[in-house]
Length: 278
Image 1: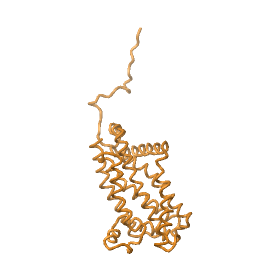
Image 2: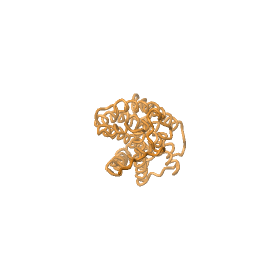
Image 3: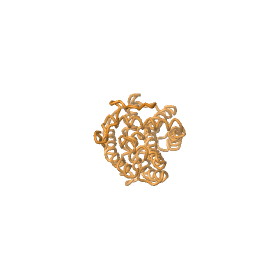
Image 4: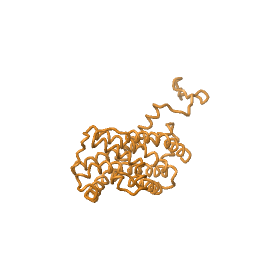
């Protein structure tokens, strides 16, 4: 004697012709997918903590090295140099850290991970925005260690704790925006090493030909002109104004506007390139 399995009407399979399909997702679903992908990135960091070496060791080494090498020559002594150095080190370290976003993205694409994401019913931008959101943890660690190292060496920001926190958030937000540029490089490049090479070729002139370590007026004419219009210089000045004086100037708004423009331009370009190559 056999029995037939009868599927209840409430559980029946809906024919394809009756389904309401859409190739778009809502903003709420996009944000939820982004949070899920960001959690994936945090799990990766937890399982491979050596990924944090650059944001834990680099701020300490750079602060000590630049303070004791250039402090006496530029400001007369280390203590006088710290108010100018720490914001410069902070911006240079966190912005440089954003390169890792592109290299890790390229490695994941080479492994086929993003091909699987592309087949899922999730927002197209979620695998990218989630990875970039998870990297804000790296920026936060680098920011905290840079200010902590400066405090140990005798740097006590006159702007107060609130201004220091705001300065850190500004750097993290701008670095997250810049990471979209390197994410674009990660999508279009062929290898992770080429992403790192291209990124450093862009970052080194921007970070070192700025006011991060030396006053702009001490540079030769052409270099001084470039440093004065360098967006990194504006970000460093905004951080100095906040941390040292507790003031909000035009450089802060220029940095925020620049960050918005970068995201508006490179986020669509990165998603389009990702969908084309994935």
